[in-house]
Length: 156
Image (cartoon, rainbow, N blue to C red; front, side, top):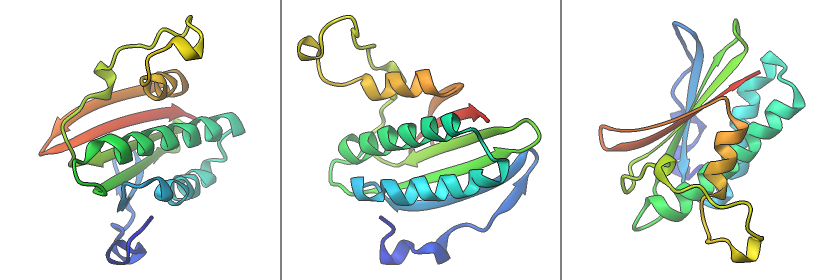
């Protein structure tokens, strides 16, 4: 959710980058912020009129990533997460980055769950990042300036 001191007035104004429009929102990394972040991202995508499947994939990924940040990033939750959306309308591509200053952790290094096993026999964890990798066209991670930065891209 957007806290009082993180209301929409604090959003960075839209600015043009070389490859499209970029906007960001900062919210507390809590489960309750997922609808706010999803709505923010969907609003930015609407002028591209992406296919329903692409929108649904992005919604699933937002849910998975925010859930992971809310659960694991901060030793004393909640902490902030900044979501940056950049749209490249000419090539119909959306880039979404999730930045937190929690414990350094590259989720892409997590082991791949054995999906051949029945669900009850699998070890917990790893399914969200596996889905993210399958649903997005590009996924990358970097730790820079004290921040975890997980970036995803989807062709629209």
